[in-house]
Length: 437
Image 1: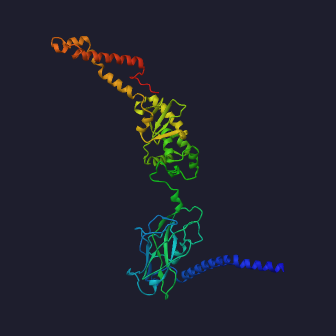
Image 2: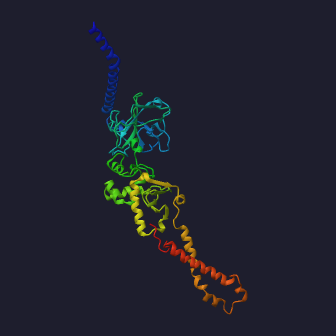
Image 3: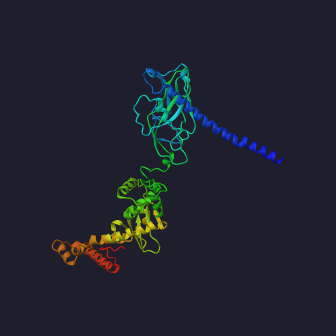
């Protein structure tokens, strides 16, 4: 009894689960075999088309395919419109709008065009056409996921939502054509197949991981030429904190030799990658500062490591005021800043930076310029010079009391000059030889 119940359960399982799967498989295999048999029969009876057996009708693709074509995207014409196909008279070129063929069923196929030497040949044999068809089972090339058909209406049809598929594995780019043929016979009339000009087909996933032209500062570094996503070079850069195009340009600015060593490429590839990176649009006008609390000296720079100035004792010194040694010292800090990105702070512009880190010598510079401007008056307004100026030509009202006239001006100037000397002696700022850092 139990054995009988088990047999019944097995039979039901086969019918409900395995049956449909096997049925679909058999149907698909039979379909492909029948299609191949029909094509072989057509080939054996027709062979190569010649003048004695040439049909007067043909399918014709009216629009050129816009390439490259991405898998998963609709195939369109050059004008961004769907591609049209028509049944035409080969002799006159006129569209056949009436008759048995004007509403025929048309099969849409994809043809392999790689290594095709028949690009400009008008007539293909049936064998040529059939040998180029990419079947559904060929997963290494772009293909249609299912059979595609369209019906002519008054001799014309529009190919809408026609998409090429790809397998889960990465697909290399290749050249293909669209092929169209009548899927049914009518009154023994043969119609010549249509084929488009060749076009390039790309795996749509390559678009997601492709290079950018031009790249942006915020792009992942693998957007640059010769650096593939998740490849060896990409991983090398990631391991050295070079994640973005911005980081690549930063290290190239301060230590290009080290960057090339990290990338591990020869001079030709190196030049290609750097040239691509240099086309980047520098749209970041911020000023960055690396000035950790344990340092007395910091450095200011732009988004790609260009030196802007130094920070000393919380005061900003522009690059124009730095000596050669001071610039070298600041550039060495840029390497430290690159390794310690978390300690970098940014400012919208140089003015904002100077609000937090004012220029240390701005007030002294003004005083120094003022004193230098009046220094040459010391001799001019000395008592001896004043006697010369005011000698025989001086008039009584210029010698008035209360320090007026030239005597009063001379006294003020001399006092200011002496004040400058005291300022220089006591301040110890060495205004003429600024030692900033």
